Each structure stands twice: as structure tokens, then as C-alpha cells.
Length: 75
Image 1 (cartoon, rainbow, N blue to C red):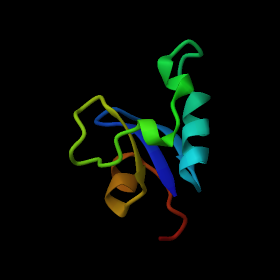
Image 2 (tube, rainbow, N blue to C red):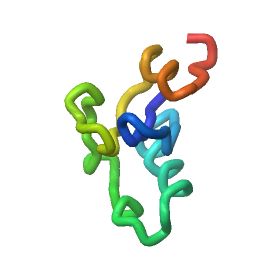
Image 3 (spheres, helix red, strand yellow):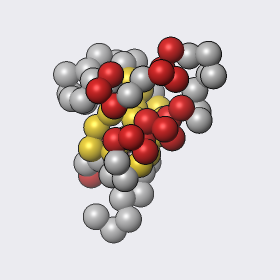
Image 4 (cartoon, rainbow, N blue to C red):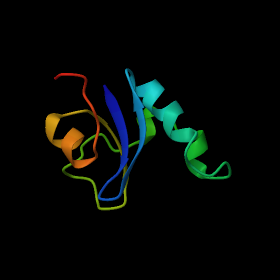
């Protein structure tokens, strides 16, 4: 499972693939946001090195799931 997170703030997308997570995020952001044109390669992929407020696309971990209230389905 992949997550699109604005670090320190909110979860914006969830998906089984990176592409699905990005598409889910696009439903929740402003239609005129530059993020509407982003693909998975445009995101920071390391949560720990990202700045607070930066959008990241990461594989879900138990810690991130707890921090952002995500159900990992029994993992």
C-alpha cells in the first residue's frame, strides 16, 4: 500500500500502487493545483528526509499508518 502525505499535516491519497495513491490524492486537492499534473516520480519518496509540509509518496509502514490513522488491513 502507498500513501501520499503532506508531511506533518494530512493524508491525501491511498492506493495499492503508487499511481493509484496519486490518483486518489488528486480527488482531494484543488482542481487548479499544480499537483494535478504530478506523477509518482514528482514526489519525494523518503518521508524522513522530507520537510514538514512537503508532499511525499511512500510505502505504508506501521508507524506511518498509526500517525495518519490508516488501516493496513491486519498487517
